[in-house]
Image 1 (cartoon, one colour):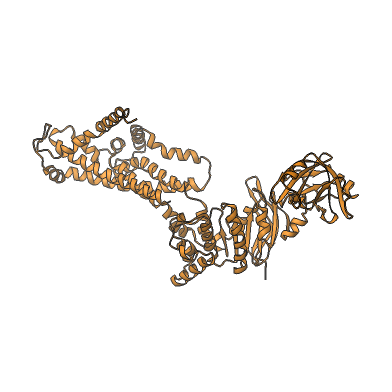
Image 2: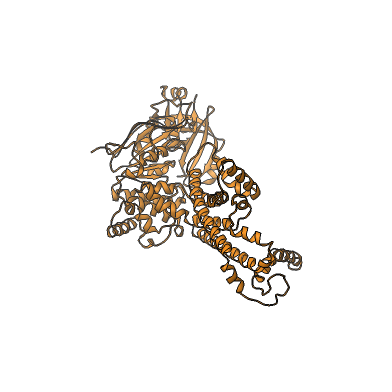
Length: 356
Length: 262
């Protein structure tokens, strides 16, 4: 069976702006796939090309093995959940959900059944007669989902659908969306700039930057082994150790990253265990965050970020560390080599830099 | 405030009376038994002038012409205004803002300027005065009203509604019928009624584009010099007021209801 979606060297230009720059991407059937990236990175344009709202300037776009580059949205087996939901305000919830069936001339009886089924799927059975204006944000979100799923598309596109919800509701919806995807078995393609969202829900994700795909992999792959400084800095927070400092610490000049939570902060006198990389520094900032504390540590003019669980320290002790000389150490296997050098011309700089 | 406010209230009341009492007198003297002179109070009241007015072939012809002009101007305005609004809303093109300004300009322009300009244009191309020259004149400002209402409505409509409709499988005309038209309907009704009302009582532009034809406002104006017809003129004025006021009042209620629905 052909892949659900295949981008074959796809580019999209708007006048002189290159929004998408030679993207190759394969999304498998039944996958929960996220496109993660900052705004303007080309992820939404890629989604809109799958939906048919934009046409690629060059390259081929295949849905289940068929080239759809020239097909209008209404001839594609794909449905979208819009960022602003785009519910029709003059229709009831049931009419909104049944719209796709109505314009495709599905009979009354079947339409009613499938609308009921879709509303049950998102737990809105009782609200069919309301108008969108009478619903809460979370309820509108569910209507938009039901409306897109009622057509039983082969691919469901979601464009930052949780952006307008508050944190608590967003976290609930993340879990629910993932459960829903398992239940219906449809390929979900989810666009977001929120790395936590992408890590929580995805089977695989692609990190976008400047119209290109920087890395594709499972959430664990991308988080644990970022290919370059951009991915390391965008997916979670990371320390990028550049070649000069790397050579001094490990005897090899390959740049690597190390996540703040992998670093142990201890008294200067503590002897680092075997198999660790160790360095001394001065704490310039200590922030107590309840579950953990965040430290910024100056190491020979570079700043290293450390996140440490508050296992055996309380609030006042965290504050007292500021200005102290400390020892940092982390396991050798926490050093993740960067496959590509940091691209200084493009992309934001990583949050921290060591050495140089 | 309560003690200080009476002066302002009196001034406001005075202004309102100044504006509206003359209209009340027009209505009152439509029912007077006297033909030529105005005495206050009227010596007696009668409805016979309505019958006289209706029996007058000139008045009937003028009323018919005004109604037809208003109706056709309204239709022309709705079609052209909606199409322009759609273009300005959905696409970006060179001169878009300028076009928008030129469409609205006839509302701000004094009628006499529009009238003179149209008159010269009509003479220039040797167009004989007809029903259509009046409609062309009225369409200038009627299009503006329709355009304004529709564009205001569209600007509050999310473009993703159209994308959502296409995404769910609707072709162009289905999207127009099921999404765009219902979204615009209240604006179309409001704009249409206002356009009708504006056209129905227009006189300045009409005098330049009508030639010898008499619309109802032109008939009223020319009758003022014939004092014997005074009560009949007042009857006609009353009809004009009612025929313009009703659509405007309806339009206002309609747009308020549409406002509440969104």
